[in-house]
Image 1 (cartoon, rainbow, N blue to C red):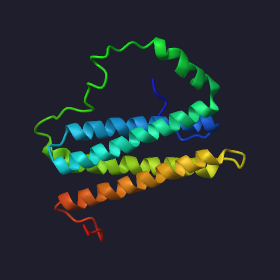
Image 2 (cartoon, rainbow, N blue to C red):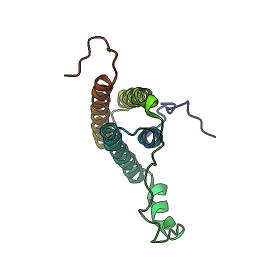
Image 3 (cartoon, helix red, strand yellow):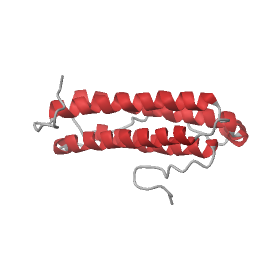
Length: 178
């Protein structure tokens, strides 16, 4: 059973390793969200946008895991040890699509975009709180990675907001499509 709230890790910084795991959880949630959003729309442009952002989220997951492996020796050792434990036939490798399209879900597109924006904003809040709580002796490379990921999440928020304002017939205050 997960100890996390719906859509977001706890955000309690115990140590660097815990922060990196919290970041990995947040990115996995985002990857699953975007995969679901892709499957629920037939709009090619929005599907392409969701896929682009999902690829970034997968990269963020990898960045967090690689950094964790550099800090936590168990992870690095286990990475080498498990290679022989997982046997997946060559005929199945790289054969699974991230999503399949579900028909007749067009009316959920705007809700999915808004849900995606919410997730991006949650990630920004989570990651900014970790930077604020890191001690001075924490490694600068971790902060550097977090700052890069925050910038990507902000970009995703802007991309999604533009798509939302272009597609929604209603206005969002002073926000324009320009």
